[in-house]
Each structure stands twice: as structure tokens, then as C-alpha cells.
Length: 438
Image (cartoon, rainbow, N blue to C red; front, side, top):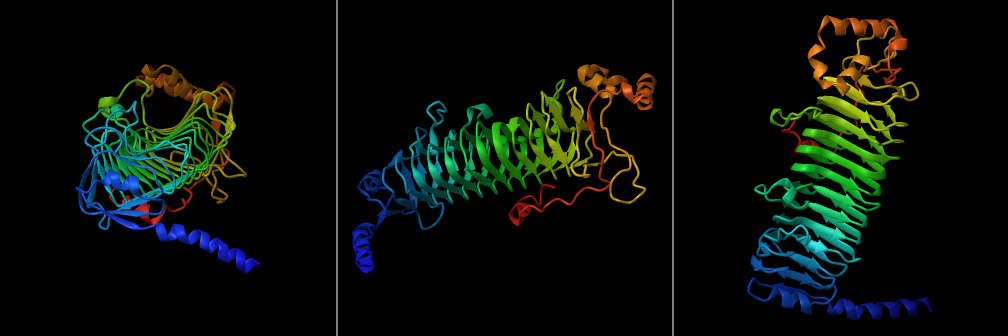
């Protein structure tokens, strides 16, 4: 009986398998007609050359070429280059250029806004004014190893994002190289997605999260950027193994982030350019705004104007095992409640800690308290910075040390580390990419 059932299933599948075929397309051969006549499972192989037009894919087919980049889809400066209206679609090895620039119409190189599934977009090169890849409402999608370039002649606000994910689930975005768009990867109202091993540069934000939960951001690299990772209005994020280098405003920006883990990330050189300097605008390694119940651990923050800035009710956060090095201001903490920044007897490394370790247990014998009342005075009245080295300010600092009751509530690390923890190494691919950016 079982044999009969298996035989019947095989017979049912054979007609579909037999009908699937490989179709050859040429630049002058009517590609849209071929796409319309194809059936699910077909492979359409593009011969080298330029294919001009705005093409619609309605069936579960593969669109590819033998030599990567030899087949060029030119959208003529309008609409979408490829509009996907079905599931089980593969787009591989193509060069896609010159789609529309209308951001309101969501013009994109590759666009899908259907409840589609099992779409793979891999090894393509995209260059245009609008959005690179726009995926909406789909599930089980993969965007792998693509190269996406925006138009640097446009203002950042007038460009589309490199990869836009909206109300999607179970999506993997990995190995992409994105630059000169507005944001590298923008995710909104999406769950259970993985963003990993992407390289992003010359953008506003590398990875930008909005209203999403239960996502992973792993082993990405953002450099020469305004903010490496902008995490906003989201929860249950796991952000680990990422790197931010040469950002102007933020290494990591956390705005209304809850129940998330930010760990083993490396942030280096966050400094506002001289021509962009303004009162209150300093480069911040970690900026934590209205975010609580998170874990920030084993991150390295090196050479930022402000190592970490917490404000607007960012409390109930565990901060331990981090390394704060070479930051002129290690901590800017705007709150009236004292917080302990250690866990189970492990604090953080502070390059300006002046205490001793007489019992040689790797921890300072006295707590580290990075801020005092003078710091808070300067935060409230930035013009007072010119007085920081004056005898009056030095006397006030001495009085606070002698009379701790006068010291306002702030950050206290009871177990400061004498040496920076060894961070978990990033993947070999990222190390190779960053070799020239140390």
C-alpha cells in the first residue's frame, strides 16, 4: 500500500518536473514576453547584453546569466527594474541599473510587496537613485552577496535605502556590500530576521531598525558613516559581533530599545567633523535614549568624544565587561538615580581609572565613578567648559571628593577591570575587509 502511494506521488510530480525547462533570452528577443510565457520552475538564462525596460515576473522562475554582470537590466530611469509578483523566484548574477528616483512610489531595482515566499536574490550588482531592493510582506526570503550603490550626486535624504525590509519575517540578509544610499539596511515592523556579515559605508545609518522585534544583527561592518547602527522603537534584538569605524555622530544609537542584548561589538573613532560642530553635538560611541532593561556587555568603545551617553530614563540596564578607552568623556549620564555598572563582581575597563590592584585579582581596589557635580554643571551649561582648568573648579572637585554627600547620583562601577577584556574575534571575512581601516 505504501509503495502504491509513493508511486502515485511520484507520478503526480513528474509532469511538473518534465514541464520545467531552460529558456534562452537575448537583448532583442522580447524578455517580457518570455517571462509571461514561462511556467513555475523554468530557468530563464540571459545572454550578455543590455535589456532595456521595466520587467514583471509573475511566475516561480529563475532569472540568471552564465557570466555574472554580463546581462544588464536598464530600467530607463523610471519605475522598478524588476517587479516580483510571485513566490519561488530566483534573481542571480545580474547587473541592474537606472531605475526610478521617485521615493514616494518606492521605485526600486528589485521590488516585491506581495505576501510571497521563498525568494532568493543573490550575486547581483545594483546601481540607481531609488531603493536598491524593496521587500514587503514576504516570508522566508534571502538577500545574499549583492553589491548595491546609490547616487552620490543626490542629497542623502533624496536617495533610497540599499535594502528595505517592511513587515517581513524569516528573512536572511547576508554578505551584501552597500554604499552611497541613504541607509544601508532599513527594517521596519519585521520579526525573526537575521542581518549578518554585511559591509556598509558612506551612508547615513548602516543598519536602521524601527518597530521590530526578535531580530539578530551579527558580524556586520559599518564605516565612514554618520551612525553605524541606529536601533529604534524595537525590542528583543540580539546585536553582537558588529563593528563601527569612523562614524561622525554615533557608533550605536539606541532609542526606545528594550529587552535587548548589545554585546561583543567594536566601536572605534566616533568624532564629529570640525565643519559640523555645534553645541551639544559630539560623537558618541553608545547613545542610549529612553531605553531600559537591556544588557550592554563586552563591547569595545575606543576614541569617541563621549564613550557612552545615557539619558531620558535609560535605567535598569546591565553594563559590564566593556572596554572604554581613549574617550575624552567616558560617560555622560543624565539621570537622578544611581546605577551600578557591574555584574557578579565584574565591572568594566576604564582607560582613565587611577586606582590600584593591591591584591592582584584583576579588579581595582576602589570603585570608579566617572562623573561628579562639575560634569553635570558643564552638561547643563556647556559654555562653562572654558572654566574647567580654573582654580575655582579644581577646588570644587576637591570638596566633592572630601564630602561625598555633596556628590550627585550617577554611575558607579564597584569592580573596575585593570585590563581590557579580550573581545570575541569577528569573522575572518570582516577582518579581511577591515584590514585597511584600523
